[in-house]
Image 1 (spheres, rainbow, N blue to C red):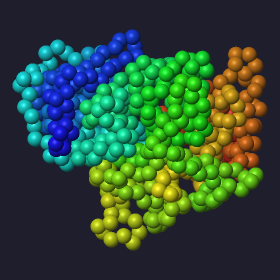
Image 2: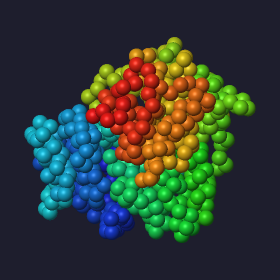
Image 3: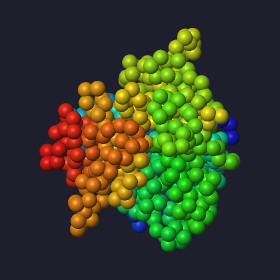
Length: 582
């Protein structure tokens, strides 16, 4: 087949040439809905014909369908109409979900909102409350919405935006990444070559459709290949992680990915007996991305599900971000590159050195070589000087699948997407500053953490995930945790740690657990923790993809909105997060 001129062209070809082939299947809530390429194409053209009455060509259209069967036809309908689809979460009733959706609506200056009949009342109420009642809201699952035979194909230049991909908001307010048709096609081709996927691959997952890994990897990549995908609601996984693995078994899924926390949940909540009843022999690529990849998680998952036929080499660590469309690097299918266990003290000075017996260390998992479509530099975040292999700095990227900027944010786009290293010629700019710290070693990329989340204490750089992981090992009662800094000099360390307490005698354990946290961090990292808050499970905030929202946790702490089960505090902001404060 000749190369598609744009993503819309590719989708139209799929609808014509693969009309009877299964495109996707929704499962997980008792129902099992299968949609062919022909039906998807026809439904999308009906939606597009209705949209063309509003003349939305080149304008953003927000999609609020959740994880329902209506999302993908609406997404394609926008492309078929020449509009720019903007995947967004549905209002779930929480303040966080409402604020995020309102922020997307206002930032995108949406011409239209598409939803379904189930969510339409809540979306319409939200539009009115947010002063956006002038924006039309259409339910795309209404019968006879539009006539596919009256649809007219629009002209789509390759550099036209294919979608706006709003960032997760894990470290800042959401921003719309503008992904062009050319960039989307380039990244899809890179995913195919990196993972070795093809039309016979069987995809599956539960990630939200508005998340970059869920949208680009779980929904659009199968369409790019002419393959099929099985989709399960996110809530089904959250309630019972075993369902994800059962879906992989039942439908013969060969490619499925998720963040590190999902693999940990499967290890914690799936019993040995349940694991032995699974058949995971056909799972060829289990991609771990969207947050830091932990060596202990990979090892524990491989060991737990080896009886189910899972091969260790199927676990593929990866790294990507919305600003690069999705994929930047992923582990290959051959022998696993060596992990790097380094001296923690040297790492605090951004140096990679061998471990010293008796001193704290940290193990890094390589996330693979950088894809051919992207050039990577490791740059000192302050001097902007490129660094050699083996030194830690900010990861900079440029290439054919890196987006051009944020929607309607020219100043931020110029700063973050058109960076140039110190001493570079004008034509050597165009790098994306990812805000992620890492290093290159023997052709492999290693990710250390977020630049803005690095704790600078006593002149040393400490990565919060190191502290969090060390604390979580202290007790079987500990779940998620977050470490961050506060104070005028940002030098006071706070640890918020979820703890499962029993109904009898659990509260008596809390003071000793808090003391253990402080002692551990002092011994392992040589710093004092000024504030330890032991909290109920579910307190630590995460994005929809599972990324830890440390910035949000810091804001909650400073505003006194964390209600701990037990707290130990010292220092000038000691009273901010005290128990009982509203």
